Length: 280
Image (cartoon, rainbow, N blue to C red; front, side):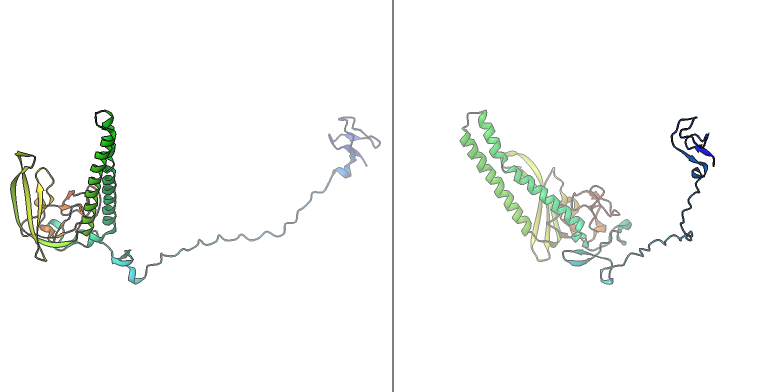
């Protein structure tokens, strides 16, 4: 049987041990070179599998009937707040009645944040007199020990006023009242009898029969004087920066924000400045 070079395929003599063409030492017969291709048995092809159906997550599970339209607050279920303007008022504004949004978690969170900021600022003022007097003693004839003592006394006074203010704030209660009078009077500064200013006094009577007076000075915002009129029935909320809530808000010229005191139109539902819900 003829032999062929396994490298270049040249025909070789039967006794050849090297290919005369390429010099390859390994030679084999044609029968050895030709190999039958191996057939890999892979079995019968399987039928195409259909795509798996997508997982059906289903519709969201509705809450129990007792919780529909409610939110959890303070450990108990409270009615959900409807932020749509109430009908029946002036120009689509609020109708008569006190708002239940006074317990809105969003408003309460903003009030708590404002209180924390105010307390932090107050306590920062306490050590300032000590630091200020001590520094002043370095550039004056005042002894450092005396400066430190004066600063400590003034800081203690600041601290006492702050603590009294916090206690009074926590002790204050919400009450309902009706405006019975508004008046102004001229007053003068105690240290300068020639300098006068105007005081704006709003007088109201609570449902318990107690007379209360809100005294405001010219140059300020005058919230009670500008918002309340004689005959107005209102609720006083001491926890809010703007504490007055009219019973019949349709008589008002604006809806104040309890947090930033911004004046909003009667048709507004949220404060146009800070975005908090309005008492409607």
